[in-house]
Image (cartoon, rainbow, N blue to C red; front, side, top):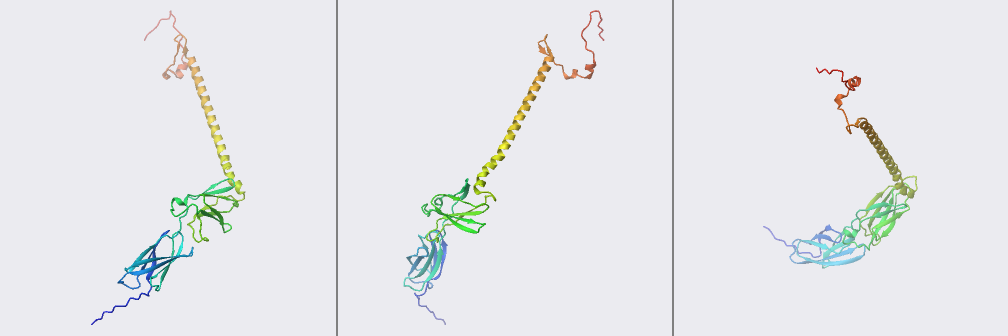
Length: 294
């Protein structure tokens, strides 16, 4: 024996298992289940989106007969905080979830250029990769002094650079640049951080920074001078050797020059030797001396 029991749908029950599936910079995908399984008719849901930063509300209507409902909330702001409430259109019990959208990205290519008495922070425009960012919003810059363990707000700018002065001697600093925070610092972009620890100790900041090119010049100039002197001496030595060889050859050629033949006569190396030096030189033959041929 068996009996079939059909439960009476209770439209006063809240939606079940409300949660966030995916969040982006300007949208959020939420998902929930109907108050009871297998609805036999379309169900009208009210989706209320409360902006916790701006203190504003928006209500969307969603109609579905599915047991599982997925809905995308659009036109949100990057880095925003929202409270989403879902309930049936008859104002039944509600389900809620809090959502934080993805903040704007950090600026790229943050770098430091050292000047005489200050430094310049440079970075790429955030509008190049963030379509939701307007340059009129600007950037804000913070500085952390690790020695004093203090974070300071330096200011904001709509440009892609910022000048920082009055840095203390021997202190290490971390600079952060991010999209300017809105509504009391509650809606900010991701910060780009760069460590700056190039200041010397025991010297004035401006003297240390401006002295670097001088120190480099003090090393490079003597080295170049030594190289030039060495090259000059080398050229002089080569020139002197060339002149000496030329003079020696000229003297040697003049000593073997025959005015009768009009040219210089050189003997082969085989005819030279110690025995030739000791042998008497034959100057000529007399007519009255008979020649004997062996």
